[in-house]
Amino acid sequence: MALGVSKKEKIDDLAETAGVSLAASAWKRLKRSPVFIIGAVIIGIFIVVSLLSPWLAPHDPSDKMLIDQVVKARNEIPPAQPGHPLGGDLQGRDFFSRLLVGSQQTLIVGVGATLIGLTGGLILGTLAGAIGGWVDSMVMRLVDVMLSLPSLLLAFSIAAMFARPSQFTVILAVAIVQIPVFARLLRGSMLAQRHSDHVLAATALGVKKGAIVFRHMLPNSLSPVIVQSTLVLATAIIEAAALSFLGLGNPDDRIPEWGQMLGDVQNVFDTHPHLAAWPAVCIIIVALGFTLMGETLREALDPKNRR
Amino acid sequence: MALLEVRDLTVVFQRRGEEPFRAVDGVSFDVEPGQTVGLVGESGCGKSVTSLAIMGLLPKRGATVTGTVTYDGTDLLKLSDKQMRDKRGSELGMVFQDPLSSLNPVIPIGIQVTEVLERHRGLARKEAMIEAKNLLDKVGIPDPNRRLKEYPHQLSGGMRQRALIAIALACRPKLLIADEPTTALDVTIQAQILSLMKELVQDLGTALVMITHDLGVVAGLCDEVNVLYGGKVVEKANRHPLFAEPRHPYTHGLLSSIPRLDAAPGEKLTPIKGSVADNIPWAQGCAFAPRCPNALDVCVQVTPAEEDQLGRLLRCHNPVVPGTPAAEEVPV
Ligand SMILES: Nc1ncnc2c1ncn2[C@@H]1O[C@H](COP(=O)(O)OP(=O)(O)OP(=O)(O)O)[C@@H](O)[C@H]1O
Ligand code: SF4
Ligand SMILES: [Mg+2]
Image 1 (spheres, rainbow over the protein chains, first blue to last red):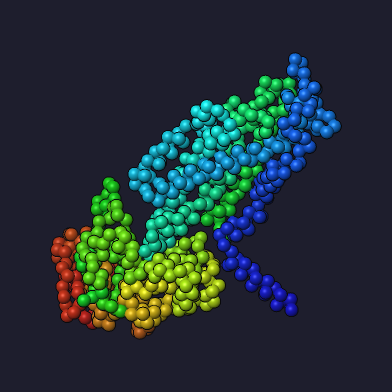
Image 2 (tube, chains in turn orange, red):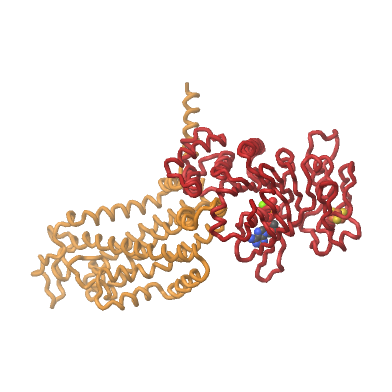
């Protein structure tokens, strides 16, 4: 009977390798990649914490409950104490709670900026790649100009154009900087698709232009864009933090955000380094998590690595 | 009147900084309803370019197409993009060489079959699915309901080509162009696909233009054969006379270079010497001259004209005399 069992296993195995879709085969490789798992665990914790942070935080992050321990003249802030594991910040608010709740805003900024950048990039890249001709030339010229500037400088200039900085202007500034990156990437893979056999075959079936673009070219052009989105989540969080640090962030500090927490303590960095270190480390770890996921995803989705 | 009349079809590619290149050079042939016509020749002789030109699929920029392609009384080359799109897939079908890359990898087979039914026959998705199942059944794909939900990479090569044939024939086109439909397949599968195509075109009365470099395919399928060399038809004849008595030295060479079941024991295969890279331009004489065992001095001075010889068209100054055995390879 042993023989029979192993034979059946073999058949199952064959059926499995034959019966997997593109996404499934990528997923199979990702599951086996320790690097991807580390990234996914980091991001998983980050997302869970940020979603649950209002309940996880022991105190209201805007409540200046320890204000009587703050002595401005002597540059004293509330130290760690029972109920406040990381002490308080410059305004006597519980630092641990602010750190937890800060993850939420950071997630919103990262995801918001990436989604807006992605949408803009998809629209421009699809126009350029699908229509070609002068539309393509114009889009690509715009993209080249934007990409020729250092991204942080560009984000800084865009953020500075808004009279009243807010969370939204930060998101917008970071997002706009990402648009040309997505647009160029998508345009490149759309052009490759335009000359592919299956697009020629679909054209030979009289499939209409719209369907050629949206059913045959776009879905096949998305994998590099998906990878890039993951990487951009990391960049967006760092750039948003940089804008806050440079004073172009949300001036309303009742709801904390890591970048902003970092910016707020610039003047006391030498005496209270932990106030900067905690949000900085959080930003770095989350950015690292997204980068690890993005890079492994890139490998897994690369058709050259299939099977 | 023939279903398809190709007259003086010429395709010139113009690449920046390069000499214009005549990939197809004055090709003419007819296809009657229900007839199967072969286009045969070595790699690079312009077979695919001919088929793409007929289908209007050559890039607008860089390729100049002249001549006429009359299908059912209308010149396809004069139709607008939209008119041509309406004809493709409904009246003109096409099957390509590589079944895997010709299917969209991210869409299930079913959607790729229903797409063309919805597009040209106006069926709703549901009806189209039923029709798609029937189509897969007809092309011999087992368990069609399951296959409809699968992705191209989950099918075997033969099954993919069957699916592509189903898609191409979904709207019962009057003309099907098959560009080396079996080249990418195993030998055993090749035979199956060819007999499937033969059966289907007979059943549906579809006219077929079969493009191949494989004379074996032609032998089993085609009523009339056009032998292409360097973008020109060098010999055109019905299948039987062509195989029995090849007259053009190139055709003769092609036939001598394939194994035959009826060959006498010990008979050697004689490949055509040289390659298309040795061609001289048609404008200077016969493109085949550098490789031709029959070449005369006149061959490199005067372009041979197309001549009608007892119902067969020949483009040659010194055709093979009927009955000549395969040329011995000339020692160099
Ligand atoms: N888009 C193009 N631009 C420039 N030259 C081209 C283009 N397409 C084909 N050609 C050239 O035209 C010639 C004929 O090509 P074609 O693809 O028709 O050959 P073929 O007979 O189909 O060969 P094969 O058996 O390899 O498919 C080749 O020399 C090729 O390099
Ligand atoms: S024209 Fe001359 S070179 Fe050309 S095929 Fe005939 S004999 Fe050979
Ligand atoms: Mg070809």
